[in-house]
Length: 352
Image (cartoon, rainbow, N blue to C red):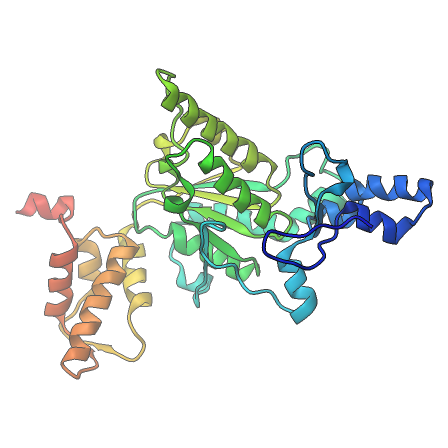
């Protein structure tokens, strides 16, 4: 009947031989058929719900442990699946938001590209299976979000996952990258294996730190660094879900990666009209503005990203709360801008 014992678990752990005994008994033809199915042809194996681990070197192929995916096991037992926690074995954290598209302010061209990504998430399965394009197109979808910090890359990825009912996981690069040879590939392999067939969105923030340009090989360190990049290329191309890479500078991304993106989405600094809309949408509903505040003038004078604007609103709101007020004061907004904002607009520099 096969079976094995774990290092700590003292109960019976089934193997491929266990499954063959239960499914086919002594029928050699049935055992051969089921062995083919368990090695990759069965739908449960193809979807990653069940998999047969590699046996110990020198052992028969069906002596490997037969494993049920932990997420599906939890779903079968409790009816729901808890989001995996950030750890060395799963170096990613789930992103959630209460916002919707109406709360996101983006330029028309950027929004059009995002709508294209949303359309792929909703209709990609129809394209690949019902239209039978899986033999002509690569699985999954790859997107590069590039632009200055605070322009909405992370927020957009999070809202995109929410409106399409997909879980978004932000990869913790500090947990992925290792100074030890082979550990970075091992960490990423575990991440992609866990996400495979679950329709998760993997979001790599500041990806240029990991997906940097390959260098000319001068020593062993360069050679292994290039191997990491090549491994990432292969895993991104075979992942059947959506992978989003975010970078502050697009030219820091390896050209081999850039050619593999179906979507290149630019997140520029917001224009004056967009800054004014961010100011209006970002204000707390339970507070009012001091009559002297002219948001249009502030939006025109200070060229700030959406993230910086929200930091200023946060600062002014806390100042009002500390005074026991529900009114945002102009001097608090200006103080917040002075603390968080480093340079005036070119127009103001000319005036000064």
